[in-house]
Structure formats: C-alpha cells, structure tokens
Image (cartoon, rainbow, N blue to C red; front, side):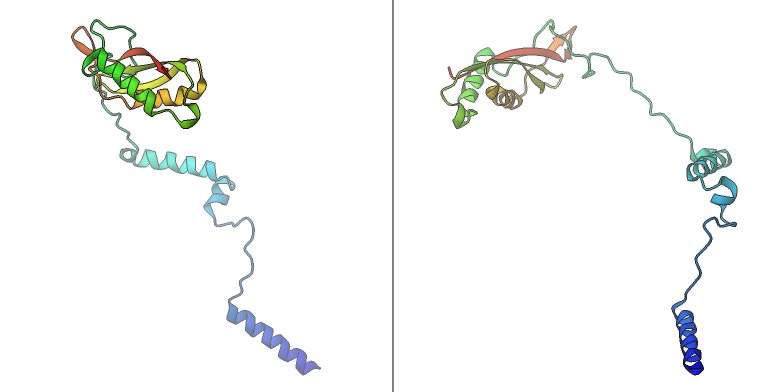
Length: 181
C-alpha cells in the first residue's frame, strides 16, 4: 500500500512539473507600479503619467489650432435669408418649374394614392451653388403625399442662386405642390 501511495505521489509531482503549474499570484503585487504608486487606480495612474510625460516632452503634446479662413457670413450655410434683391430662378424660368412639378406629381404617386388630391407646401433653401437643401413640409392636406413632395423637391436640377449686394446667397423658397389635379 505504501508503494502505491509513493508511486502515486511521484506521478502527481511529475505531472505538476511537466505541465508547468505555477501557484497563483497575490491579488496585490508588491512590485507592480500600479499598486505600489497609485493604489490600483488606473485612471489616476494614466492622468499622472500623462502629466509627467507632457512636462518631460512638451513638443509631443502641442496642438496647433487650425487657422480659420476669414469668410463672409453670406457664404456660410448657417446664414439663410428669406428675401434677396435678386431672387433665385429655376432653370428656364417659372413655366419650366410648373412643368417639372406637373410631371413629377403624376410619376411619383404610388398606386395606393392614385385618384386622391392633396396640396403640400414645402419650404427649402437654394444654396450659393444652386442646390436644393433641407426640404421640409410646412403644410399638408394629406400626409400620405409628404414623402413624394420631398422626393420631388430633392430631385430638382440646380437653380440659379439668389443675389444680395452682388454676391450669391442662401435663400429660402416656399413652394406649393398639388397632387391629383
């Protein structure tokens, strides 16, 4: 029996040596900088180490602010006026705009809305490049047509932008769109 116990204990010891068993580390290592210097607080360690590094190597932490170009506020997309001295114009004029709306109101209607009538008032602005921007439905007789009206306005070709004091400006336009007429 003693020989079996002796053989078994040698086999277990040999197995432990071969598998590389290591005892678990203590939960608070004494040689670790995080625990010895900062008490285990990772955020505190990162802040302090960054501060020390930035004082030692300040050239690494310089942030150059980009130089802002001086632009007129009229070119800024955040400045949109209601009326301009020379208002924006649809390519080929008012008649072409009416034709565009008439053709769009017949082709963009889904089968479920055929035969129904609606008047949708859409407000959007024409930017300095002549693009239609930010169309919004202001008033709607039938909300089912709102998406079609927005799609119609978004698909418009480039306009001639409005002008104020000889410069092109962003200018609002309110446009009624009638479906089913």
